[in-house]
Amino acid sequence: MPEMPEVQGLVDFLGERATGRVITRASVSAIAALKTFDPPITALQGATITGAARHGKFIDLALGDQLHLVVHLAKAGWLRWYENLPTTLIKPGKSPIALRIALDDGSGFDLTEAGTKKSLAVSVVRDPLDVPGIARLGPDPLDPAFTREAFAAVLAGRRTQIKGLLRDQGLISGIGNAYSDEILHAAKMSPYAPAANLDDADVDRLYEAMQTTLRTAIDEAAGKPPADLKDTKRSGFRVHARRGQACPVCADEVRSVFFADRSLEYCPTCQTGGKVLADRRLSRLLK
Image (cartoon, rainbow, N blue to C red; front, side):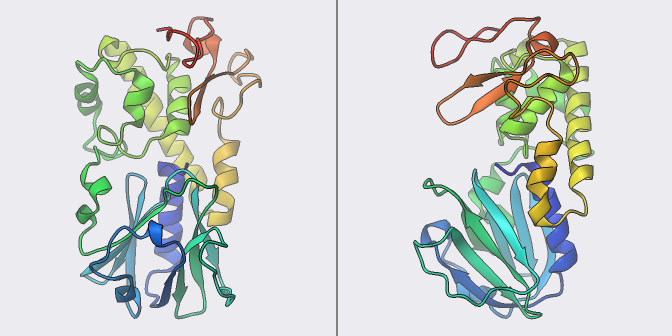
């Protein structure tokens, strides 16, 4: 799933490449992806892109002062950019393309989604806060106002396991499965540690790991075209998606815990005092 660093990379690319361009055509080929009807999708035609912004994992293209094209790429969505947009006809139900945007200089982009479970969401709104997912977002972890003290306040009193808390978009926006694994590894913390049990030193370490991990990933994504962002993301991982490989810090084997629709990865030596965490599908979680 694209998370904050990749989404920021896409936003930066679109802000630089598409700002000032006029949308000449917006073609929806997956009607289920379109989550709004007023304004209609046809309102995009003739609109000038005036900027790009990120809200958590949402991409927000501003179109003048009255319109926004907001996209959530969900688990398997992506943005495919073309300097010369293909002219081939998109057949609904026969292509991974959900939306095609054509621009006045011949360039444009497709929003695509792989797999059979379709969750990519496209909204045309007058205000980004009209998108329920944006309205519910917690603070951005890289916002200067999100200080160590603000982070501690989010953690205070919550019995939620820290892995789940980091992924909760209503508490902290933009972090998903991959970067929560990476943050917890950098902080040398078990993914099952209850947030309320963290002491001041734990909070300091976790906050610093969150800031450093996300800023480093954003720096790595900067200036990359959309086609390169996925590989850039994967190349920076220390534990996520590296099951069975050696931890780059201690050389222990990176392990996984599997869930119904995802897994988490961690290093026993770095994070759990050498304990191998039980598979949630089979037995009680280890703390």
